[in-house]
Image 1 (spheres, one colour):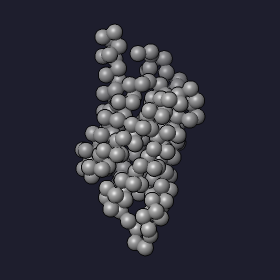
Image 2 (spheres, helix red, strand yellow):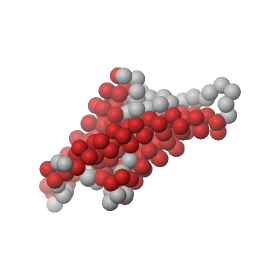
Image 3 (cartoon, rainbow, N blue to C red):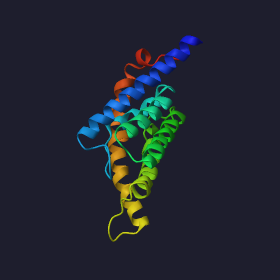
Length: 170
């Protein structure tokens, strides 16, 4: 039992660390923040398909990334919660491989635009709050489709080949 707990915590910590590193990489290229966000780290949101240790790992990784990159407090809280909800959804839908990226895409597409509007005050001149929300849903959603849908599924199919070696039952 103790070895299983250590293995679970180790996997979660490794996933969190990789998430932070990938976020810093995307940040270095100017891809991780604002309206269109292509965080390479969001591809990791498919990992709960393989292991429940990814759920706390992704949450902590996102939380640390948001803190370390200087995000506003609403982004630290609600952006991290969006990743947590996405990870929980991926784990819940793990029996249907093609649905793995759907929950993170939906969670971020709904929550992040609200953070942009209310946390950062990013309003587009001449547009109402509802219009800005719709615009940001489109742009954030596009970034999430790239990060989670395309890159995430590429990662899923790559890891699928090594599933038993990388993710033995915990």
